[in-house]
Structures are given as structure tokens and as C-alpha cells.
Image (tube, rainbow, N blue to C red):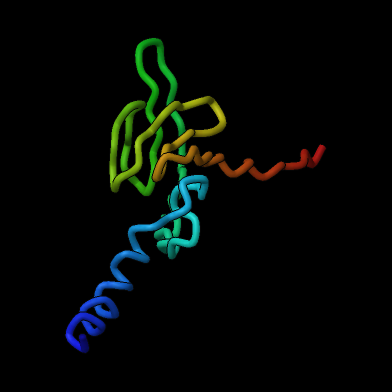
Length: 104
């Protein structure tokens, strides 16, 4: 009798794990994994020609569609570059040029 009682008590936690609410959203109550911090990139310049678009990012010329450091260059615009990082779109913008006043 004691052996049966010990076996039932030992198996009780396992059966409790198997019983789950079928209406509970997937991942509910799960521990969230910390996402890696976003990498910082420096956009130095953009060159757009008839048949190519190049952006200088962190001192390296890169083309549309190219992947580097786990990030893909989605699109190069005249004033910005769209990157896809961990499934999210990020935008790098060129710093505006300083305005120079005329001394006339």
C-alpha cells in the first residue's frame, strides 16, 4: 500500500505538466529571452549611380542586398539606408551637412 502511495505521489507532478489549458496563447508564462542589444552602425556616405547603389557603413562600401554582421541591407535611398536586423527594419540616416553662411 505504501509503495502504491509513493508511486502515485511521484507521478502526480508529471501528469500535472501534461494537463494544459488549450485556450492559453502559445508562449504564455514563458520566460522571455533577452534580445541582443542593437548594434550601432555609422553611415558615412551614399553613392547612387545608374546601375548601382552603395552606402559606406562603418567605413566599408556595401551594396543593396548585402549581408554583414547578421544585418541585411534592404534598400539604399539618397538620404537613408534601410537595414533588416533580427527581423526588424532599422533606418540609418546621413547626418545633415553644416550650413555655411555667406560673408557677402
